[in-house]
Image (cartoon, rainbow, N blue to C red; front, side, top):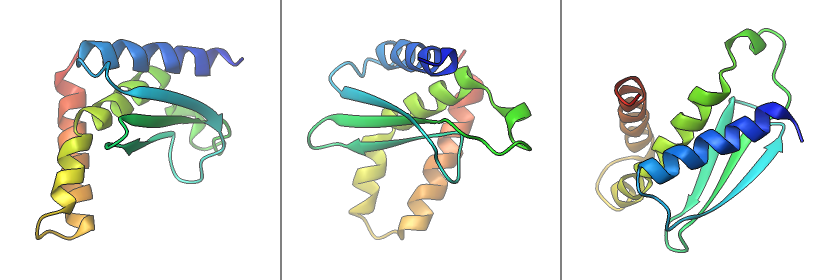
Amino acid sequence: MDKDFELFQQEFKKWQKWFGLTGYKVYFKYETIVSSFADIKINQGDMVATVRLNKKLPGKEKPFRDVKTSAKHEAIHLLVGRLEQDGRYRYCSEPEIYEATEELVHRLESLIQ
């Protein structure tokens, strides 16, 4: 197994525990992702999340890869996942909810050490 993927899983689990999100079953995948360093898909009803780390980054993006920060970023998405789901039931468009969630995640990323 790749050392970056192992580190990614360890860091994600650390933040998952720190945020008190241990009720979720989390699966990890190490595969090619077209548009990001990592991502997460959450099934809130089943309390299941699939977290992926990009196995094959384009050469120009490799210098910006930060496995620990990416793991923390995805764990924060798990933290706000219910908010995002609930927001979809309100009178907002999906792009508005996504933008607000990303803004919150980036702010929390810099605040949480």
